[in-house]
Length: 195
Ligand code: URA
Image (cartoon, rainbow, N blue to C red; front, side, top):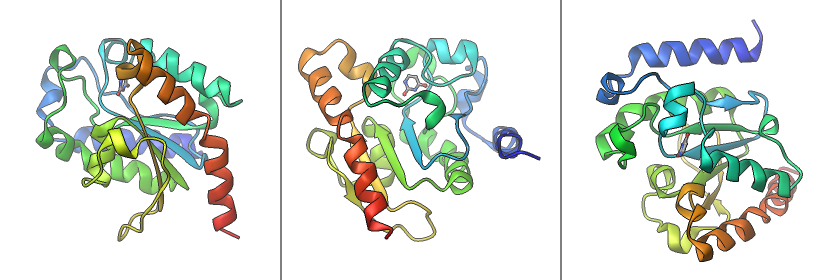
């Protein structure tokens, strides 16, 4: 079995086991997408309308913006893996509730345990505060965090504003684009730390 096939099997198992009630209102689950051999994982919030229709994360307006930012640093979606903390669309795109994040977290942790990324890039506060609850996105964005979490494969975390929040807010958009441009240096620093 290829790594992609193994990952698909993992998603199907986690979807069957997940007890999140959003399952009842969503059209379908949205599995993580991208390169299972990457060292870079992006974690967003929850699927929106387009994602719920297609089953693929970040394919709507926020996803297009994300693809533009990836291109600005010479990367493509196929170079990374992208997923959400919550795997089912909340009704009318409302914020996911704490219990919904907790119910989907076992799935997220299984995905991350399979990929074992060197760095996790948070898109917005919902995924960031799941791992680093003491941080505020307004202060933490664009700053690399080193943290050892027991039984967790990743030690490096890089929080960013969520592209959907930044899309129509000029100041936040500029900040997100500037923070995004730091990613190549962040990756270099992580590689250096492994030597
Ligand atoms: N916003 C997210 O956080 N995730 C998606 O998949 C789409 C939009």
